[in-house]
Length: 174
Image (cartoon, rainbow, N blue to C red):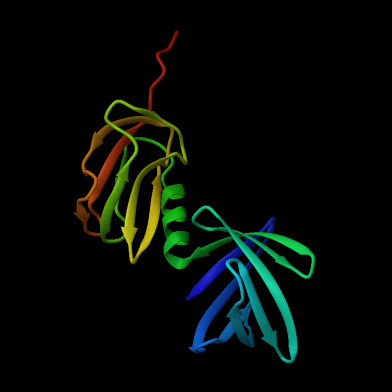
Protein backbone atom coordinates (compact mmCIF):
# COMPACT_ATOMS: atom_id res chain seq x y z
CA UNK A 1 0.00 0.00 0.00
CA UNK A 2 1.20 3.54 -0.74
CA UNK A 3 1.14 6.13 2.05
CA UNK A 4 1.90 9.82 2.19
CA UNK A 5 3.88 10.40 5.37
CA UNK A 6 4.03 13.92 6.79
CA UNK A 7 6.44 15.12 9.48
CA UNK A 8 6.07 18.84 10.09
CA UNK A 9 6.44 20.44 6.66
CA UNK A 10 8.17 17.43 5.07
CA UNK A 11 6.15 14.95 2.99
CA UNK A 12 7.34 11.58 1.65
CA UNK A 13 5.67 8.84 -0.37
CA UNK A 14 6.13 5.46 1.27
CA UNK A 15 5.21 2.04 -0.09
CA UNK A 16 5.23 -1.02 2.14
CA UNK A 17 4.77 -4.56 0.85
CA UNK A 18 5.18 -7.80 2.78
CA UNK A 19 7.25 -10.20 0.66
CA UNK A 20 7.07 -13.10 3.11
CA UNK A 21 6.54 -13.43 6.84
CA UNK A 22 8.78 -10.85 8.51
CA UNK A 23 10.37 -9.70 5.23
CA UNK A 24 9.23 -6.39 3.77
CA UNK A 25 9.98 -4.18 0.80
CA UNK A 26 9.93 -0.50 1.75
CA UNK A 27 9.93 2.18 -0.95
CA UNK A 28 10.72 5.69 0.25
CA UNK A 29 10.47 8.45 -2.37
CA UNK A 30 11.43 5.97 -5.11
CA UNK A 31 14.30 4.22 -3.30
CA UNK A 32 13.69 0.57 -2.28
CA UNK A 33 14.89 -1.14 0.90
CA UNK A 34 14.59 -4.77 2.05
CA UNK A 35 13.67 -5.00 5.74
CA UNK A 36 13.56 -7.93 8.12
CA UNK A 37 11.16 -6.81 10.85
CA UNK A 38 9.63 -8.44 13.91
CA UNK A 39 7.47 -7.14 16.73
CA UNK A 40 9.45 -7.61 19.93
CA UNK A 41 7.06 -5.93 22.37
CA UNK A 42 3.65 -4.29 22.52
CA UNK A 43 4.94 -1.20 20.69
CA UNK A 44 8.53 -2.20 19.88
CA UNK A 45 9.73 -3.42 16.50
CA UNK A 46 13.14 -4.91 15.76
CA UNK A 47 14.30 -4.08 12.22
CA UNK A 48 17.31 -5.23 10.19
CA UNK A 49 18.26 -3.50 6.92
CA UNK A 50 21.48 -4.22 5.04
CA UNK A 51 23.15 -5.68 8.15
CA UNK A 52 22.16 -2.79 10.42
CA UNK A 53 19.80 -3.53 13.31
CA UNK A 54 17.70 -1.04 15.27
CA UNK A 55 14.57 -0.90 17.35
CA UNK A 56 11.64 1.38 16.76
CA UNK A 57 8.99 2.24 19.33
CA UNK A 58 5.67 3.10 17.68
CA UNK A 59 2.78 4.76 19.48
CA UNK A 60 -0.45 5.43 17.56
CA UNK A 61 -2.09 8.87 17.82
CA UNK A 62 -5.65 8.74 16.56
CA UNK A 63 -6.48 7.06 13.25
CA UNK A 64 -3.63 8.40 11.11
CA UNK A 65 -0.96 9.66 13.52
CA UNK A 66 2.11 7.91 14.90
CA UNK A 67 4.93 8.84 17.25
CA UNK A 68 8.02 6.83 16.28
CA UNK A 69 11.18 6.74 18.41
CA UNK A 70 14.30 5.48 16.58
CA UNK A 71 17.82 5.80 18.02
CA UNK A 72 16.74 8.49 20.45
CA UNK A 73 15.05 10.60 17.78
CA UNK A 74 11.29 11.16 18.02
CA UNK A 75 9.24 11.57 14.84
CA UNK A 76 5.61 12.81 14.89
CA UNK A 77 4.11 11.36 11.70
CA UNK A 78 0.79 11.51 9.90
CA UNK A 79 0.15 8.66 7.46
CA UNK A 80 -2.49 9.00 4.75
CA UNK A 81 -3.23 6.11 2.43
CA UNK A 82 -4.71 6.94 -0.99
CA UNK A 83 -8.30 6.56 0.29
CA UNK A 84 -7.81 8.94 3.23
CA UNK A 85 -5.93 11.40 1.01
CA UNK A 86 -8.83 11.47 -1.48
CA UNK A 87 -11.32 11.95 1.34
CA UNK A 88 -9.38 14.89 2.77
CA UNK A 89 -9.02 16.48 -0.67
CA UNK A 90 -12.71 15.95 -1.48
CA UNK A 91 -13.71 17.92 1.60
CA UNK A 92 -11.46 20.85 0.57
CA UNK A 93 -12.64 21.20 -3.02
CA UNK A 94 -16.02 22.76 -2.25
CA UNK A 95 -15.95 26.14 -0.58
CA UNK A 96 -19.36 27.81 -0.48
CA UNK A 97 -23.09 27.32 -0.88
CA UNK A 98 -25.21 24.32 0.05
CA UNK A 99 -23.00 21.24 0.48
CA UNK A 100 -24.33 17.75 -0.21
CA UNK A 101 -21.90 15.45 1.56
CA UNK A 102 -21.68 12.06 -0.13
CA UNK A 103 -19.96 8.76 0.58
CA UNK A 104 -16.61 8.57 -1.23
CA UNK A 105 -16.61 4.77 -0.84
CA UNK A 106 -19.08 2.03 0.02
CA UNK A 107 -19.27 1.12 3.68
CA UNK A 108 -21.22 0.90 6.91
CA UNK A 109 -22.28 3.99 8.88
CA UNK A 110 -20.67 3.56 12.30
CA UNK A 111 -21.56 6.91 13.84
CA UNK A 112 -23.52 10.04 12.98
CA UNK A 113 -22.35 12.94 15.14
CA UNK A 114 -24.56 15.78 13.83
CA UNK A 115 -28.30 16.18 13.58
CA UNK A 116 -30.67 18.43 11.66
CA UNK A 117 -30.38 21.99 12.95
CA UNK A 118 -26.89 21.53 14.43
CA UNK A 119 -24.38 24.28 13.72
CA UNK A 120 -21.08 22.81 12.49
CA UNK A 121 -17.64 24.15 11.66
CA UNK A 122 -15.41 23.40 8.69
CA UNK A 123 -13.43 20.23 9.40
CA UNK A 124 -15.77 19.03 12.16
CA UNK A 125 -16.48 15.30 11.91
CA UNK A 126 -20.08 14.59 10.93
CA UNK A 127 -20.24 10.89 10.17
CA UNK A 128 -17.94 7.87 10.48
CA UNK A 129 -17.96 5.20 7.73
CA UNK A 130 -16.30 1.82 8.13
CA UNK A 131 -14.80 0.58 4.87
CA UNK A 132 -12.30 -2.25 4.48
CA UNK A 133 -12.04 -2.60 8.30
CA UNK A 134 -10.98 1.06 8.64
CA UNK A 135 -13.05 3.87 10.10
CA UNK A 136 -13.14 7.07 8.06
CA UNK A 137 -14.44 10.30 9.56
CA UNK A 138 -16.21 12.55 7.06
CA UNK A 139 -15.77 16.24 7.94
CA UNK A 140 -17.93 19.24 7.16
CA UNK A 141 -16.52 21.15 4.18
CA UNK A 142 -17.91 24.49 5.45
CA UNK A 143 -19.15 26.32 8.52
CA UNK A 144 -22.92 26.00 8.49
CA UNK A 145 -26.05 24.29 9.72
CA UNK A 146 -27.06 20.68 9.04
CA UNK A 147 -30.34 20.76 7.10
CA UNK A 148 -30.63 17.05 6.28
CA UNK A 149 -29.29 13.76 7.67
CA UNK A 150 -29.86 11.02 5.10
CA UNK A 151 -28.28 8.07 6.94
CA UNK A 152 -28.45 6.33 10.30
CA UNK A 153 -25.99 4.25 12.29
CA UNK A 154 -25.72 0.64 11.11
CA UNK A 155 -26.87 1.44 7.57
CA UNK A 156 -24.77 0.35 4.58
CA UNK A 157 -24.17 2.95 1.86
CA UNK A 158 -22.78 2.87 -1.67
CA UNK A 159 -20.31 5.29 -3.24
CA UNK A 160 -22.07 8.57 -4.00
CA UNK A 161 -24.88 8.10 -1.47
CA UNK A 162 -25.97 11.34 0.23
CA UNK A 163 -24.95 11.37 3.89
CA UNK A 164 -25.81 14.88 5.06
CA UNK A 165 -26.55 18.34 3.73
CA UNK A 166 -24.89 21.41 5.27
CA UNK A 167 -25.91 24.92 4.32
CA UNK A 168 -23.98 28.05 5.16
CA UNK A 169 -25.54 30.26 7.81
CA UNK A 170 -26.39 33.62 6.28
CA UNK A 171 -25.90 36.46 8.73
CA UNK A 172 -28.66 39.08 8.58
CA UNK A 173 -27.51 42.45 7.28
CA UNK A 174 -27.72 45.31 9.75
